[in-house]
Image (cartoon, rainbow, N blue to C red; front, top):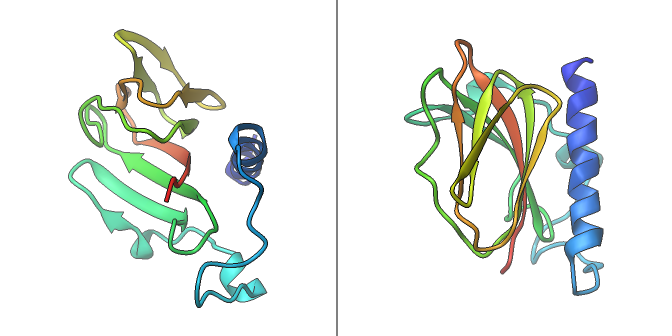
Length: 147
């Protein structure tokens, strides 16, 4: 399955999350001062526009300053590293593995999985993701912004 198809699948998760988990009606307007156009609503990954992190890179396809309430980020994590230690927060998250091998930690347990796997993190549950493979781990993170 091509990475483009995987990204489309993850975007479908984004919309599913928005409708399945939202308890408030969807806003009909863009954030203050934001105008949506075809030019700014299509975002193609470019490594030179990604942000370097201590564990690799991150690239925001859609951040909370652009979208009405959801974010979509791709993380690229080097072998043996993680973006941060296990943690928890009020927002629920969906992770979707595009490439590599991830170890996913949730509430004291771990599972290892590869491409075409999603991980769901409920609100306020300790979780983390780590690259346990020999190649870069590439995954999408979908989260609802609770402003």
